[in-house]
Amino acid sequence: MRLLCTFVLLAALSACEPASKPPAAGAAPSVATEPQRLLRHVVLVKFKDGSTPEQIRALETAFAGLKTQLPELIRDFEFGVNNSPEALSEGLTHCFLLSFASEKDRDAYLIHPIHKAFVEQYAKKDVDKAVVVDYWNDTK
Image (cartoon, rainbow, N blue to C red; front, side):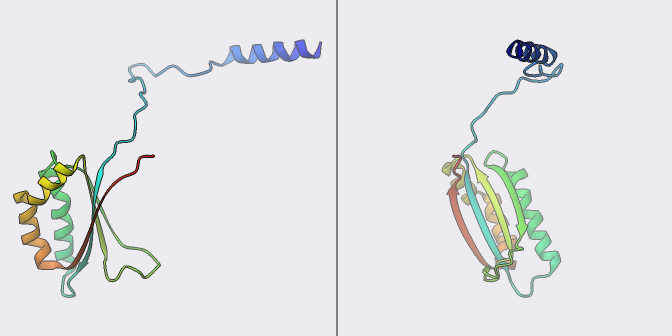
């Protein structure tokens, strides 16, 4: 009798609430996608001692603007200021991270006149040291 009551209770509960909710009206069906593999281009920067906050802000803005100017090459862009407590930055204060779909896109970016103009106008004037590392993100 106890087993029968448990079965009836479970059957009643399962009938009250659907196993999964249907998508909202007008919502696109969800599709599981694989994470996309991207080539990351990391630029770590130490500014010259005499660089003003305005000059640094101008470089940040110009660097971020490259994504808008070269959307066919740059998939994503972000940057930030170092806040590590480890004291291992060796004076590098800023990290700029660009993402590319391929090495071909990265290579085209490096020689593009817009990138070269940015380097001439901002980087050569205000950057004391730059360290660049490129890698393919691991999507596993």
